[in-house]
Image (tube, rainbow, N blue to C red):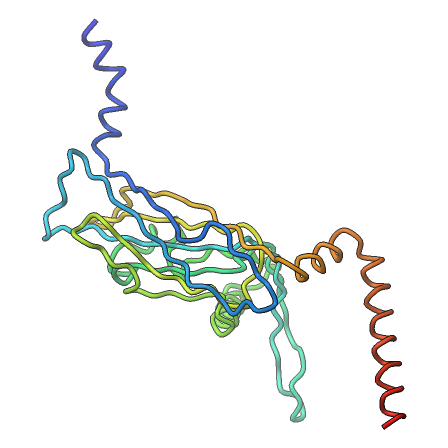
Length: 252
């Protein structure tokens, strides 16, 4: 009987021997209005160690936080200069790529885990698992992958900070992630990873909803649910504004 009880409790005892992450975010809902200029997202939490024993300072644990936006299909075009004019040359489409990606860590990712682990958990811009729809050769595909990441970085939608996570007393952690004004709407995920000796010991996820509010929300909803009427209204408004501008110019 005791042997059977020990066998049943073994998974629980093994689970209790692993640290647990208790993460949270400062804002679970972010609303975008006409005056939205971005937001500062605070990601914080605690590390619960077995029996409350904090690891030895010579073998510290590290925290990595990854904030991802909803996946989207993206078309990337490569420009080429022909007779002094920049024109669209090659192009490739990605079936699925994060619309937003931010990674913050307590130390550089390359110093925490190996390349294989980075690829499994998509830790770092160089480890993103993009889904190209074309059958381009490896060299050409790598060039487009680098171009996509560069475009997203320049627009503030992709970035990484290897020293953004602060760990206090080996237990509490916090990190700031900037949400740009051009951020897409949708459901985001904030993933937190606890790493020690090149291994991911624990992981936890929190969800963040980013949506339009006020008049912007009404316009977006109208475009999604009644595109034909939305198009007619847009044309009518353009004609009305053009006619009004003509009347004003004639009078003055």
